[in-house]
Image 1 (cartoon, rainbow, N blue to C red):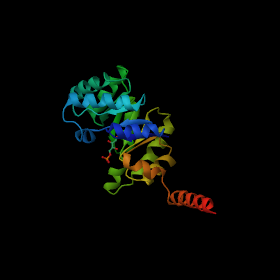
Image 2 (cartoon, helix red, strand yellow):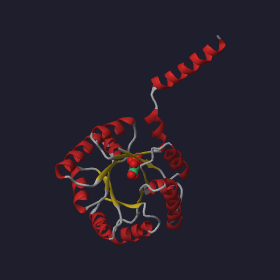
Image 3 (spheres, rainbow, N blue to C red):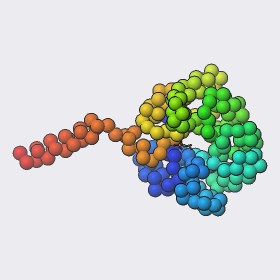
Image 4 (cartoon, rainbow, N blue to C red):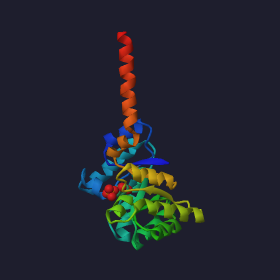
Length: 219
Ligand code: E4P
């Protein structure tokens, strides 16, 4: 399983890369809007993110909902680095853009995926990745992790090559559930990384080892 970082913060990216955990980066317009407010600044930030991510895929999301606009932005982003993957919202225009970008050998991800049939359509169109959003499904009273099980089962039936990056992750149960269903990747916010590594008994164990060693020194 790969761990993507859901972040546009270069310092966070550096930290996770140095831990050896960085499998890729996902960005979205909401995250971008916290750092930049125009396209040229966004492209500059994406270039810094690609450099910090050192070779792994960086998913960059066009804001335009229409085909022509999606293509224009995706082609601009693709010039930044071969690491760039055009992350496109699921829609008729979005899926058409995925097909066109595939012909131009530009990697794509379909995002805002909430149903198994959207996932099937993305795979048929040849998207490299899909991003199903588990947290936002939980928010409306559905079980987001169950969607991952359905998608992985269907993808296995047909041998689809599209990789699943589970997105909108809010807690460890989302990560564990995704792993149990065999999802290829999860994308997690920086604040969840420590939770992934932590256990109360690990903390207590470290404390006790240090205390015992200190006691031995005073004997
Ligand atoms: C990543 O690809 C998604 O854009 C992100 O995980 C969405 O998370 P949210 O539902 O917490 O905004």
